[in-house]
Image (cartoon, rainbow, N blue to C red; front, top):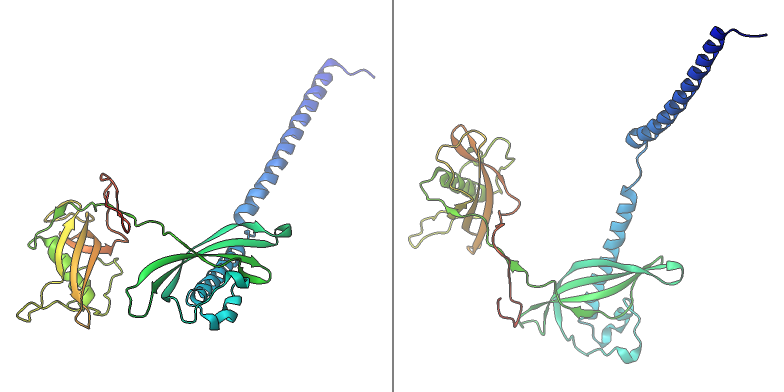
Length: 320
């Protein structure tokens, strides 16, 4: 049976439409599949990152604690402590000479750094760590103390931690560098910002006055419970805690609402034992109703972005 040209064209168009519809359906299904992946990623069961992180943290804590205990045992060890030494590390007799009395007095052992050095052993059954421990040490009890760093190599395995060798003394990370702070303007005692800072510091540290008078409503500052008191002058009169206030830029006398200023307060106070203590408080001030208020204690002072670092000289070195 023959089909006329009209129906031939209609069938061809129908086939083309069906083909296009099939393509769109496949694309749509693929898109839905991709959407399903995205949906599961966004709203599905999240991957468990917490458990492995906690396991690594716990392992690091055990290794660090072990190294810290070993340093406390090994450095002052005597001939009577051979068994304790064996609890940390295996050393043959010819490489272990212990004194009859402690060769050094140590205190305040602290973990400075714990570093993973790689997998060791057959089938990578062990993990090697280096742990740097800092101690205060003296030749005898009344001798001046020095700070020393020792590295303890630790092998971690399913059997627990074990030192791979005796510790060795190492250098520290360096004495560091100095950098000027960015506060360039010195405030006068008559400046409103200075007075607000002085009043806040006094209330915050000694309980003299209400902290709420000097802070913004959202500062979350309420005082430390009076751990300090004012230094007394030669006549027994209390002197101001704040000895100087410097600012990034001179604060305006009448600030606009929301305007901010960063300042640094130098403080001298007394402990309950009447010992002077020197503090610095980096603060952010904010304008509220035409007056400055303390909006918060900054986590660190503002540092210069224009000055060069000045390396601090180590022992026996000249300052560069």
